[in-house]
Image 1: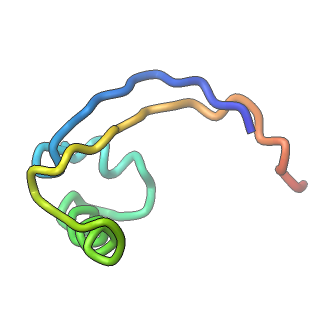
Image 2: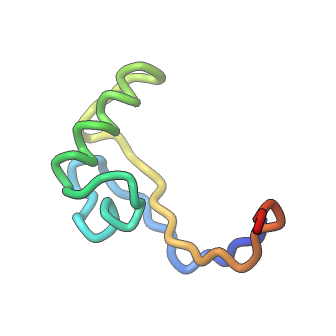
Length: 68
């Protein structure tokens, strides 16, 4: 898989904005994204509303695993 990074931002969990959360494509609202991601971090490394996240926007250039 080849990707092109468009933007990278280091942001506190509580400051992740809706357009970024929705672009991930797994939730239909910012609130659902926060709930699901909070649960994920609580199960793994721990969670804090002030925790820093690396938020990356990218374009998929080529997917070598694409099956048609």
